[in-house]
Amino acid sequence: MIESSTAHDLTFSFLCAAVLTTVTAILCPQIIQVLHTPEGICHDADQYLLVIFLGLPFTFFYNMQSSLLRAVGNSRESFLFLVFALGTLRILGFTTICWTHQAAWITAGLYVFLMFRTIIRKTSS
Image (tube, rainbow, N blue to C red; front, side, top):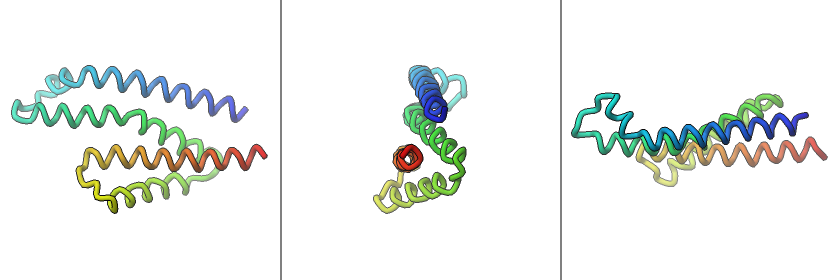
């Protein structure tokens, strides 16, 4: 039952992330126009939004994994992974806010995935 629910969560998150990322990345210039962004910063705003939208799959993945950890009673680990990811990125010198945000979600998602995989192995054996 848990494997089936986890597989459905993973599939649904992947599909939602893929659709939202594709649609928003393609519509980035139109979103900038709808927001009435000043001409002088349109290019920078477009690049920023694109980075944020390309990071959606990692955000979905991290949130799904952390919710699964919370479902099995482990709410502390996902928070610690996020803190560790931000600290690691700070030490490595990521200073641009936009890229730090994406890299933090990617790193935290990978750490939570490894922790979740360890939990599944322990409970299945």
